[in-house]
Length: 405
Image (tube, rainbow, N blue to C red; front, side):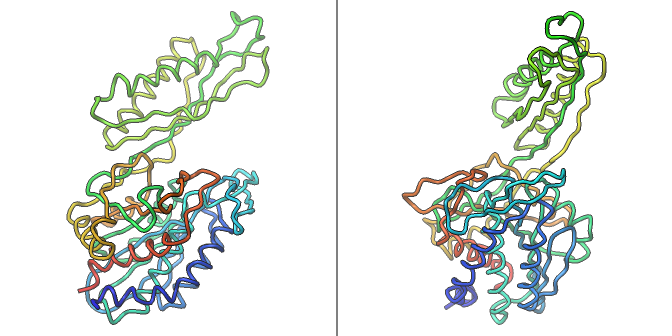
């Protein structure tokens, strides 16, 4: 038995605990930047296993030093979503939580962050229990607010770099609908898109619906913007480049016979390069201002930028190291290439700030023969096993590529 196998051997004994933890987390999700209960469970578990624990930026960092050697950071996210669960599970969430606007929301772990926490804590227990099989420092980072692109930045601003010290590599993973449960996928280069949201308010001049000539109609103005924005990808981005512009919300008025005095649009962009993202955002502003001028808008539009996600790009050398570890643990047939995903993450802010390479991979949550349900869907419910086991194994195997000599 090699050192990694010995390090992972106690996982069988942790199965019952890990499954119970997962079901508890699933039943008690918390909204972004409000993950107090979850953070408390994480901190207590890490402390009980000998980690030095720090609470910062709404998240938790556990540092386990075990002699000389590399320092590896392993990250899991903790937040749920404002989604009403429709899985029918015995442990389905019935939780509600007041958001930061004061609105009570249903809450669900519709993206699998409960899986990530359960896998991350199981991995932490394994490395704490098997210290004779590795050397170096294992940094377990549990991040809040991934769904709102706030958590990584909040932890960095609260002193994360000083707490963790220099590290050699940063690792993270996500449970996905593909590949099948028990398998993993990883590739070098861009694997998650960069993203940005823009809230746009355009102004008109209110009038009676029967007297449009006396007003400036912001509904027509907003409609023109929606249509023209589609040309950014169709006519301004090179055919070989990836870009998406989505208008997710258009709000204006409240009566059939009243022309309102403003309209609000919520726009989101995605790209596989920071340059394309910037081109799309600049194009949005240009089109909005031009359409306002063409409509005779009485006031300048207002554009508020938010939810800016960095590009998630895997370091080639570190990725090759992780892939070799995965093949050694799961077998060649269970390790796949990870095509670039259109979703986005704020994880890479951490390795960028720390100045270290990073690797981000996916692992399957649905067993063969079962119809997958997409992340963020009210019916999202990964199979408990082998999903939880694979998540823990992948974290330990990847970290072991540096720590197990």
